[in-house]
Image (cartoon, rainbow, N blue to C red; front, side, top):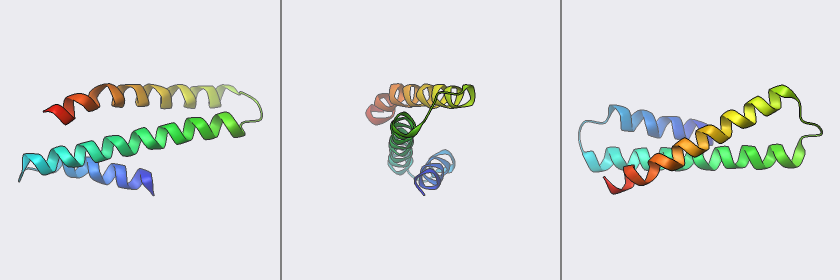
Length: 80
């Protein structure tokens, strides 16, 4: 559900042409949703994984990369 909400918020931000403030708000909400989702996935993965397999390591790496990139661009979106 959180993934769908994040995608919807970012899609709204990408296509929003009426008001800049509304577009920026949707981008911030979508980014925070993805940060929350990736953090929950990494914590859940760490706590429940019986052993580290290569697909699991690949997915965790991708999630951590997306988390870092989203967190890095969030201050620029908020201050714009």
